[in-house]
Image 1 (cartoon, rainbow, N blue to C red):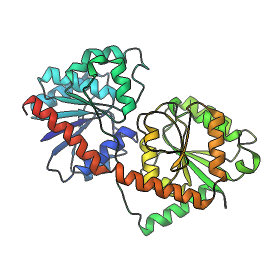
Image 2 (tube, one colour; image 1 turned 60 degrees about the horizontal axis):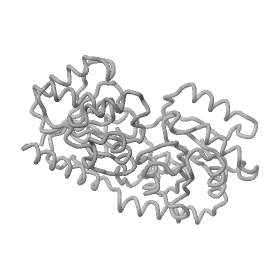
Image 3 (tube, helix red, strand yellow; image 1 turned 90 degrees about the horizontal axis):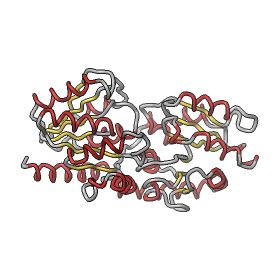
Image 4 (tube, rainbow, N blue to C red; image 1 turned 45 degrees about the vertical axis):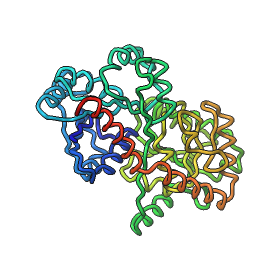
Length: 376
């Protein structure tokens, strides 16, 4: 089976991380895999190359550049791909349009968030193109329900394939690096909380700062928070820095750039915080739990399938500053033993239910069914 994956870039986003995880899990499957991108961002290039997949760089400057569509159509017409799997919304539009021009192959599109409809054009375009895809893979039940509500043509045609995570045993060098990271960013005998997310409205950094400001003095004095991720919204990042420099929060919050070794971040922090206003199935929650860390997160998308309040962390309503502040207070007041037990339960659950092998198996089931229906 020859499969082309189409994604905008290999940047440090959740879709790209799952693509890299899937490719690694399929490395020994016998599939002939290629990845086409049109933005020259290469955070996950090593993982893609290690999987044996070929990397194809389409000419053009973004999804709206007609050279990207033309190049993709030429690629599909010249290469006998059995299937195209697109990741993210714009690649899904391009894949279907190029397949129409080239006369095939079947296209599987992905939907990974509950923001379809946030742009005025997204729903009308999806209603036009829905029947041009052989299947859709959503990474959360909440995402599938959202799409079906807005685009009835997708009803009954969406497969939910939850994200997967790979296990990797840390080396002695990893442990030394984690210790150095923690010495640099955590205060002595204090707790280090981490957010791993792009800086944008969806992730609600200002809401998190308001929740921190609502903590009692003795709790606030024992915590530092690091936010690791690309500053997509530079204006929001600037506002967040100003808020973090107020009297009570000074020295309690720090932005860090995205990193290739995000596992080092998970290993160094005491718990993950994700204050998102909306999500599908957040990778970072899955990854933090796989690293044995409890999670404080908003109850959005399918996050509740991962985080069980009082067992693997705390769930709070989205946008509720007071509830988030209370959950952070409960976390900071908990004993090290209680946090360790939460983290151990989180790791056992995720490794059992959301492995990379299971991600690959469920994705392959979709591929085989699509090809059976198309006669491939």
